[in-house]
Image (cartoon, rainbow over all chains, first blue to last red; front, side, top):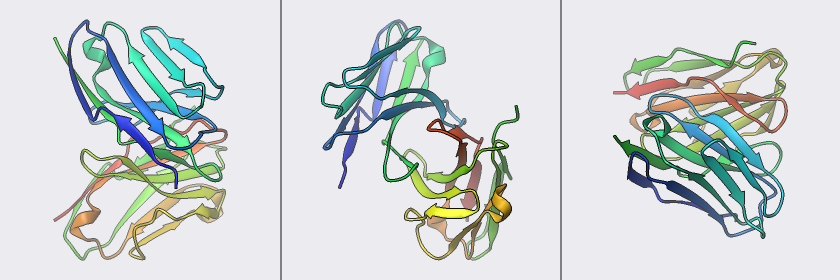
Length: 110
Length: 111
């Protein structure tokens, strides 16, 4: 079956440092989504990537989808305390349902 | 536009009791999902409704869990009888396309 690994599980950075989380699949994905969950909050949709090699930016966030559509990354430049939370990738299975990665919990030290 | 709402926000029950969680999706969204996140772990898919029909319930842990979506509007998830391992945050999400909008979740603690 399809296996998607998300790493790292935890990341502590000093404010101003960069941060990256990765999702790697054993099989080709049709698309991938990224969500952010603040502590005590609920997952919030950030972006969807569909095309091979796609790169999208949202302010300090850069999202990439690999050429083979088997891996994806979320990169945050110059982290701020507001970036704290858990970042999940999610990918579609059959039908319209999505499965979520294990998440990367980001702590930003002021 | 109102978002996805869930009730209750918190529930503390004893092992063996019954709890019913409710989700009101965004109006007009045909797709409704239930997920569970146990502390520190991944968001686990439970099931998916399209309107009132169960599209996929492969993620339901066992027959102590029963989900319904009568009339294709709100949905309920009943746990009966609850066990300790059922504790976690239960999220509901709705969508009309591929973007899922999550509710605030119900935090369930089974003692």
